[in-house]
Amino acid sequence: MENKSFAVIGLGRFGSSLAEQLYSLGYDVMAIDENTERVQDSIEIVTHAVQADSTDEQALKEIGIRNFDVVVVAIGADIQASILTTLILKEMGVKRIVVKAQNERHGQVLYKVGADRVVFPERDMGLRVAHNLISPNVLDFIELAEDYSVAEVAISEKMHNKSLIELDVRARYGVNVVAIKSGRSFNIAPDPSDVIKEGDILIVIGQNNDLKHFEEEM
Ligand code: ATP
Ligand code: ATP
Ligand code: CA
Image 1 (cartoon, rainbow, N blue to C red):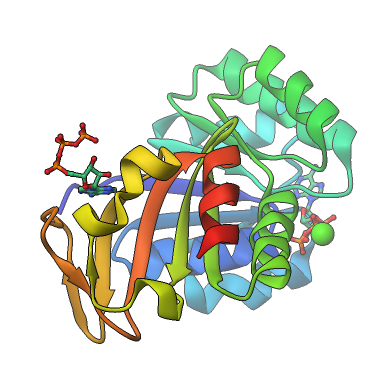
Image 2 (cartoon, rainbow, N blue to C red):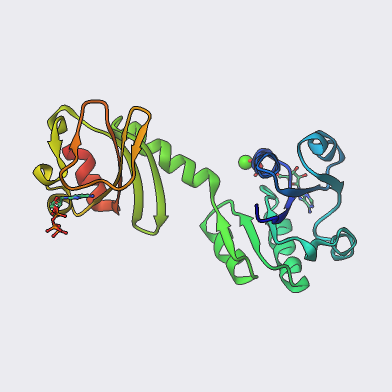
């Protein structure tokens, strides 16, 4: 395994879950929070946990923050601290900076001060759940880029025992079936002649409008 190392600043629900997951996947994880209790709570789930204020450049130097391959800033409510931390990390020459944003505006500022990637966990999760609520057939929905997504769709009776050619999915809806899930088996290279059976789940990629059309027609 590639031995990438991560530092996670801010141990709220998002930061601590991320840190724990990275650590359990076998990576080196340093967890940082200004709150001593949060640091104590994460000692067991990461490689190292330290108390520090990430807006204090000296403190970050002492931790050796530059040596980590990826630094994640998961400070939530305190937007000012999140922006300032990102700026300091950039100036210190951190290789890859990933930051959690509260909203679009916050995200724009983060890119301007040097974030390599900005994530919007609440917005994205809201979107995923919304698609599932609107149409129960849509089990999951992940935005790939503005306007392009991947949807996990449970098929309706109309599609039972039909092949991709018969359904003419790409030509009719402009979306592409990238995988067919049948019980525990996963067909990740569907052939146009493959037949879809009751209970199958389709993984479909496409433009949001086309996906919506496809979901409605299903
Ligand atoms: P979540 O939704 O993931 O629970 P949140 O978005 O509500 O989190 P907060 O709980 O506001 O985020 O902040 C996450 C953590 O960031 C807190 O534990 C807080 O102590 C820490 N934090 C805030 N500012 C700093 C800072 N300057 N340096 C280090 N840690 C900080
Ligand atoms: P196209 O011109 O649409 O690429 P094609 O002439 O290459 O199609 P096939 O690959 O045999 O023909 O597929 C016939 C039709 O079956 C396609 O036009 C498409 O509508 C549907 N189809 C086949 N595979 C898929 C897939 N993975 N996802 C969506 N539709 C598919
Ligand atoms: Ca929150």
